[in-house]
Length: 452
Image: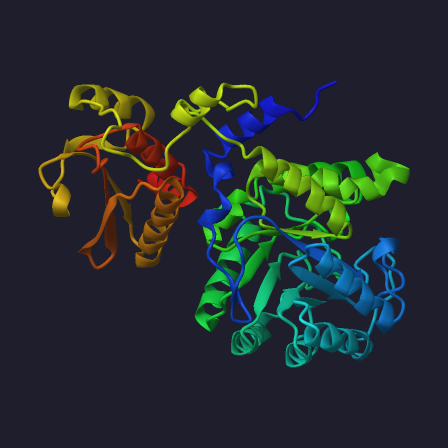
């Protein structure tokens, strides 16, 4: 039988045109309650105040039990403690908003007063605002508030809080509907268009901390079969870097339970899926009922480091120390970085990045020197700015920064000009080739190229 293995991961990365390798450094820096949120993988532990929640180990039947569990989760390393008052499982009791608030507010208030960063799971405006007034650091928004969204976002910004934006095909997490039959992370999909719209609203409100969540933890009418649901969840996790690249915000996922596969060992499922999500490189916040186990899995993967040599091959533990320290991939070009001469550079770019032209620069301090240059044209000023922001994030990730210029050739056409060279080395190097390929792989650039 076929198995998900390293070959699949490599092929998936190729299909995603390198976007699955976007690192956590490419996401925006979140500031929550005046504190900078550390970049890299973080954990959100779960406390369920709903007695019929499926994951029994996270259920707290009294406020005292919930408060105690929240403090334990913080001690286990959770950045956030997510509190919900209504189960999202099929057949679960529908809980009125008044009853949800009666369950939530005492726990939110007590944990917040003791220094725990609390996330409140809700799809109701009044409940969300009352949670903010009682100290909540994050609103885990599990529904589409429509016209009320801007009011909630303004309240979040006013409280120096953050938001987790979830996609739900229905009005909220308990109004079950069909998940659209499409690639959810394709730029033109229903799901991605929703996230792009919400990201814009988050920016307009001035919110300083946000996470985008594709809604893996919710149930859908057309994914009732557990095994099909798990396949969908795995592929979404492995592709999540596309969501981060498109919106600029870090990504949150609820780790699956997968009872159909793990059966009586279901408590081992979430640490396994944490590894899957980490391999995709696109998940920043792991929502889990098993925070200590997931923390261990993430720490083990961080201990390896995922180091590479200059040629892209993997560093192995038994490689000689001399080879490792001499050949590890440098961060950014240096004076001694080997140059690619113009004739060879012309051939290389024609083969691997044909949209780029090797020529003499006409921009800034690089004028007269060899550069690789390309243009991206669009009729939308907003799309042009999106391209420039995406290039900036890739440049920060690679520690290799091109010159950028935006010109308006007419009232309805804009041109982004990108020129890259290795200034420290005095010409073109492999860093420029890698940067060009990464820029060409951006979803925004690929779509605009197809429209030309």
